[in-house]
Image (cartoon, rainbow, N blue to C red; front, side, top):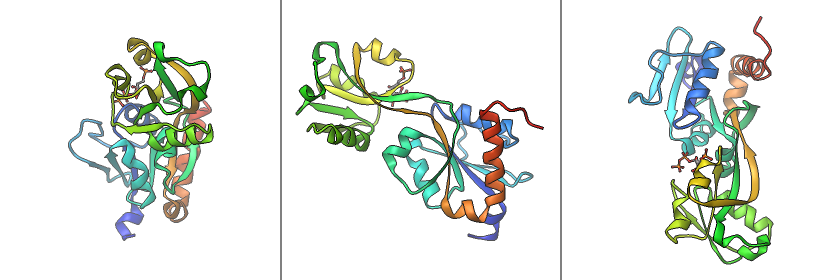
Length: 221
Ligand code: PRP
């Protein structure tokens, strides 16, 4: 680490649904920077007064930035942590962005038992989570990795099933899919690089405690 790296705290924020609530939460505990916006073309936005630097990264890449110490801390969904399986320190459940990972199929393909889905194709943005789920259930399936709009796959016959996130259930409903198994719930988490957590302990731990109080609804003194 350079002295500049030691002086600044680098926070990674993910593009997408979690960006706005994550930035809002950090602002509520005093971590802001002028021009911090998801649409910013600037990828590093610093607040030199607070000695904080925000980097805006693609969601699936966030754990990699934190694992390698390119960011000291980050805010990311538990789904991404489980899928990417990087060596980062999970410090706090921030309790927002609640959704669940699940298995869904078109109504017409719904089976009585999970085992009846054996040898079918499953489309997903989360191949590791899907593989673990079916392996644990002792069911062999073919996994097809996609990068988005997963619900389209069964409609056009690319796959029979999907493993994906559900938040409100609207996307499933509009595409006539039904949930047949819940895999796990997910919320946003604060994560830290293991070395940064030791080297910048006071700062990171204070931020964690401030966020914890906010999450628990305890007023700041
Ligand atoms: C996510 C997820 C579902 C949808 C669920 O997709 O993959 O498609 O949101 O939300 P709902 O239950 O409230 O309808 P996202 O919008 O992140 O885009 P993507 O399909 O490109 O991954």
